[in-house]
Length: 194
Length: 61
Image (cartoon, rainbow over the protein chains, first blue to last red):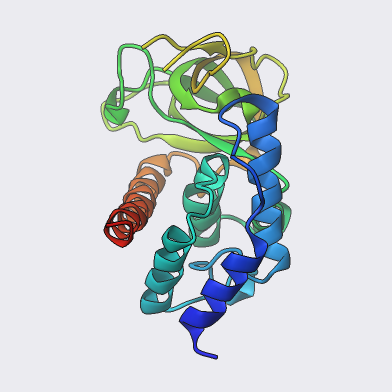
């Protein structure tokens, strides 16, 4: 059976019935269940290297997978987007072995949701002017500030958080940390207004 | 994008939040390079999404 037929058959036979919920815990459960199903079926992480649990597909096969995914009208599991397409690949590219062991399997298995903490009040998406600050204190980063437009932050387990180190200098460069959502001092998120 | 029953975006506040140094991606003060990697990954992912949308639109004609 050629690859396209395999993808088409699996998607046809394994789509989760019903409409994807559009908000709240129901949406989170649905997206995680769909991701878990793809993992169990051997279809999670089509672009990830095989040594990290992905399929390591060629670009052509990735394209075929996405075509078949669209053809099957499979759910766009938005809540897993950041984990699968930003956090996971970033960890693969530059994470420590401990970070990879901790996070990558959970992302592929649909056990965690990640969100992105980049945009800020008064900075928007101009990441060069971030105001959220981080200082090193012992074996921790201590962070103060705020982030806006955090998609699905209230449903997430982890956040990719981009901060400016202090003291600030003209040549300052940013720090990227992974924040667990129940960290002390991390306030519950309020809906942003648009 | 915000309604009482359908929240998409949220605002986050950090007040002396302590993150273990082991959670830093890459090296300290290396985040700008990491951000570049990140934006590249995000754009690649968006292109994949665009492929899906274009294919879905085409296949339903």
